[in-house]
Image (cartoon, rainbow, N blue to C red; front, side, top):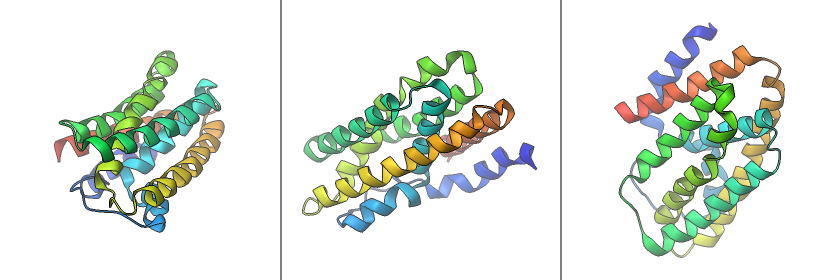
Length: 182
């Protein structure tokens, strides 16, 4: 069963990206739900939490990721979309997955996650309803912190199980590949 998980993730991944269209979000509850209902956001946060645990970057990586997402949201609100934003978002999943697959490169690749998380926040800033921007942003940052913590907890368990960690990395890579293909 474990060997088919990446394939299963790839089959269901393409239609559930969180940023396919740039609708408008405005409410606090939408911000709180987005990191859970936006599969790309959820997987990036879980992957970053996993990396924080397995690389020993306990607080630095999650806090830098949250700060980058917040700054990205403000930039997206002020500057609008940029070319390649969705590709950078998918790239964050590729980098997290590859980092989990390549233990010798984990620290260097994990250091890229806050920069890539900037694009996630940027997309939220573009999508957010201008009247509810701050509530939405507070919601997605708070919920993102919880998902990062959950990823860290899972990563603490996976640190002792390299094969399962590789499976998680393969799943992230498969999701990113399916998203790029779709």
